[in-house]
Image (cartoon, rainbow, N blue to C red; front, side, top):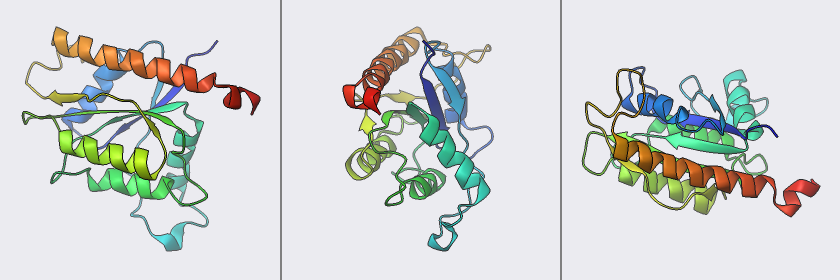
Length: 189
């Protein structure tokens, strides 16, 4: 049996994003998942005039989501919400009749230098994905406060309690994806 294919989306388009660093370290904690980074930083701004045919970058992004058995988001918080680049990606992939998110297992985390680690962005993303787009969002909250020693010199989560905390979420996410893949209605399709 092959490992479930997981799309990993970093909600920041900043080259040296701390969330990008956390995402890279997070991918090392889940060898049971085949993780592919799916980029949002080259997507054009959503425009209904461009939906047919989809721009090449959008088609690639949408294909990455559609092929994935589940999606992990690692996102910062911008102005108490999700970053504009991430909202733009959701707009492209949540079109009526072309929704890439319906019943897709999702795990949301992120980091911030502040004490609540991007909690409001994660809550907003949960609401958009789960309530409106119909994703299966993993329960529990994974807010990470970014500290200078969070990522060690090997690009791994350096803090043992944070590593164990994230590993626990990833293990639960792996089980959610596996249950979803083996659900009777999915198997018959």
